[in-house]
Image (cartoon, helix red, strand yellow):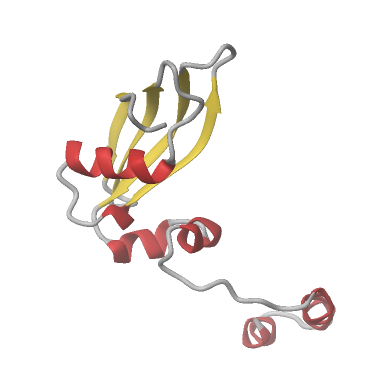
Length: 128
């Protein structure tokens, strides 16, 4: 199925020094193909922008245009893996495989939330 190629175009490209990343909107043209896996897009972007580690590339928010053939989403290329771990939301770091998901039961989470509600100030941070 991946025998047909796809074309990548970036729009609204900007360098964000404060968050140590480059950010852009990514248009993917993929005629004759339902969708393109993010892993494949990540590899192509890493090659396009000379990124040493594919893990530094984060892609999300893709929507396929009605009729197919074109998808649009958002992309971030971090300067380093450490910057990605620092600034990227936890769920995207877990998806990238840089962190393990912490599994807690719903009851544990709710009990902790209710304990924290009773505390104020610095005591609250100790529990979190």
